[in-house]
Length: 255
Image 1 (tube, one colour):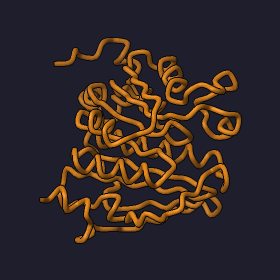
Image 2 (cartoon, one colour):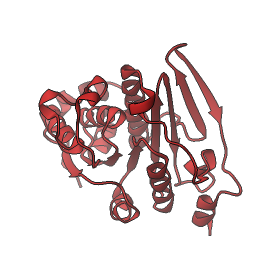
Image 3 (tube, helix red, strand yellow):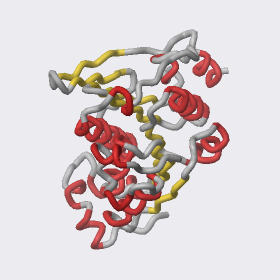
Image 4 (cartoon, rainbow, N blue to C red):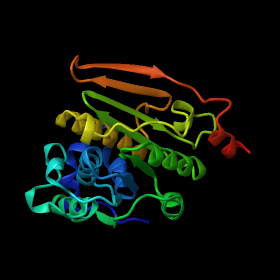
């Protein structure tokens, strides 16, 4: 059983404690939680910083990539001094500056089925902050298999999207239900398409919000709803979606 919050923790998290929906019990749940962030770029670094500031006890960061100058336009966890460092390692340094009580594990490699199989069964929430369909579909299969909630975000040009998949309920849809894996999908990269820098901060922050809601058990999550945000119109739309009765990934969890 975890130790009760000490005086410094009560002060650090006082603004969350003042929220009746969270209170001390919610802060303690957050502190006991384990979260994995896959992709520590524009989305993931922002989400990781907010989750660590909120007191998530254990955060695992997965990213094989190194920081370069073009990243600094939007990946605000990093500075000029971090160029050429691994993104997950540099983000760990920022997290420890913000909240040294958080235990941070760095995995400087690409996500694989084997790696996810070793990590995800013990995670309370996984955040998909990746930038390619192959990783997203791998994440989906793993999170469905191990019944780990998955908070998925994306941003390109002036458009962002956000949703939540929660396989703890066998009737909930998964990523495959929403975006079937045809094997021919073309990824749109920031390097070729561009992206408005504050947009990734908005979506990454929203991923942190949805994660905290899942950890504490409050509010209504985005399960079954895809939020589409357009920065040029500053307008959000919501698309409701359901489980695909022909989804091969969902069929495996129900067999």
